[in-house]
Length: 391
Image (cartoon, rainbow, N blue to C red; front, side):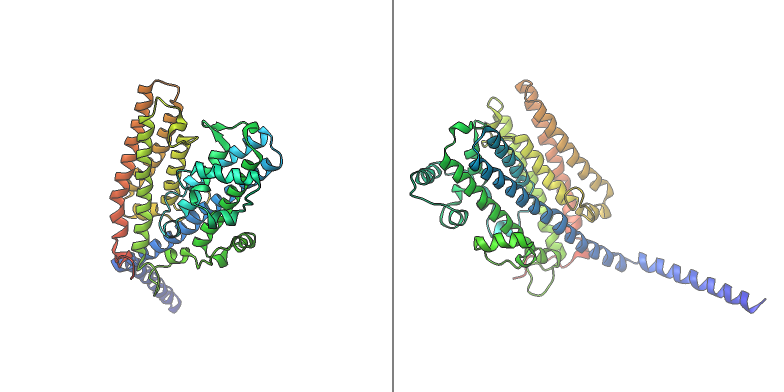
């Protein structure tokens, strides 16, 4: 037997031994746990970058489009421009509904939901300010409105009040010059607050230059960026002790989004005899429900459509593929059943009520399935420690 042949055999044995050793090492429970922990950390990075930040970018962009439409209406008060502003409002409000699954952190800390969408609008005080603008007693800009007046005098619902009557765009002839001025100021404040919301997550130093100019002109405080806290837990002095806690925040807010939708469906059932805008005076209540389900979907699948990579769905599937599949099926069913209910508005009250009851049933399933998945993910030993917030 030649020396060359013996060397080749020896090399082959060594390669096989290394391969088997690597396979056994990979399958070792400790290695698997380590890999699951790294996967969970990667999921939270994508959750922030592709779900939260992309949603906030969309909100800011739609607010800017609304402000531009309001300015155009102020400059040229035609019915076409008012209708365009009303459509821009619907898109801005729809994007706003897609952030309901991301209510922890800055949303709560800085009260952005009141700053951007206080309900109800203080219509009496709004009319008082409009009268003062009309008589020349008041010159108002967005910063003054934000810093010196109640949040109920601005925001999306105030813009809605100025643009719509009885669920439809109002007649431009009924809108005074002072109202058009006020609408422009309100929508300008919406742009500023929505960009500040994004900066609270992203960090002021990480904002694009054009948005930095707006933040500086608006006199906003400097934000270090909450995204870092969520993406990199366990850092000394940080908010979160571990990825287990950030996952719990994310999943709890997903559940909260579903729980918020349920009473809204119930209110629609209770008000079937009324016009759709009777529901919280919303213009398109079924679209609002769809956008809220979309917020859940984006959070669970790791990002807005076109920007989905690693996700909470992946972590659930690692433990229970069937449960993950059922959750994704529930999302699709909720969306479908809401559309069916929306399309049943010309049917009898009994048929509409049945369609809405089916929506409630699908939401219950989705909530129950998410509740079953929660402990699998947040109590995985790979995500320890399970401690609450660092004090």
